[in-house]
Length: 348
Picture 1 (cartoon, rainbow, N blue to C red):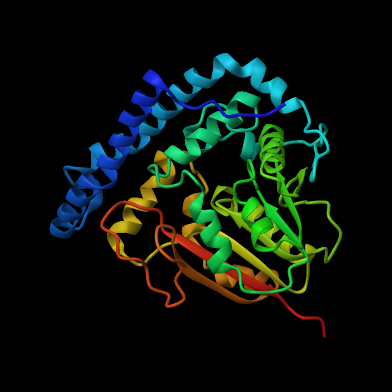
Picture 2 (cartoon, rainbow, N blue to C red):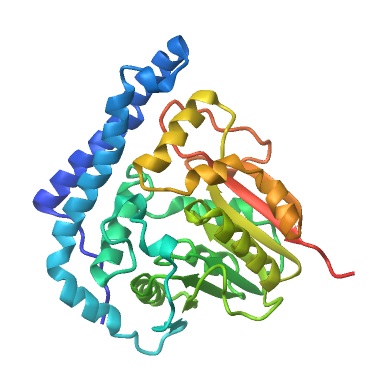
């Protein structure tokens, strides 16, 4: 059975285009006005444009999810059945754990304001799959920035075994198959529906990936099993104790000389942009994002046991990794993407 994500059409398409237009308005016109007011006053919370900016960022998210829920939910039984029908003669594999206890930090937070999260049913993962494109302001229809990450931020090397933590529905995992066709590529996630969709899409695209339902902080893989461990948009959704555990687990499963490469967010040093980003976490139900912005990430990696830790800016709409350590010149509201890399010490 072919698994196909419902595509917006008719009134749904018109409504979502309207929401996207509102998102683009607050990210460009309103953000520029807010920037001008900040330059004149220097205090974000008291600026006339800020309440509208906050309202639009949070409520356009809610509008998007509500419409997608209404579009997808009537098809939930059929979508559930399609996910449960395993592909014939698969290249890869799917390993679910019905006894896995999902952590409270995951189940009790509706990240991105998505009702029910991505773990509670088949419809949720299809809603998330469509929303993941819209939330990037229509700039990620083909998941280009995931490919850019792999192509520009992963140094050339012999990566025989690759592990993608928090792989979701596989959009961050699939580019590794293209870049390293001889590698064993593994993706893990907490959400069973996400993993089912990831498996179906990988098979449809003829990409050999093994998907497992496991925790990033306790993967269950043997010591020194991977040459590369990666994660995309994961660590800002982890409480600090869990983040440390995830990094320790990455170190454990890496072989000596192996690479950790993470795509996530960081402070830029631009006072205005960082101030707006500080408010993004509460507006978008990202309760642990502020913790990530307060810590010295290279120091944390060093404390865990990694060496050669570095944090480099990443331009998702341009050339990807910026080796010169400068941030791209952008006048619109955008996420402060960074590549976080570190290496496991070579064996003595």
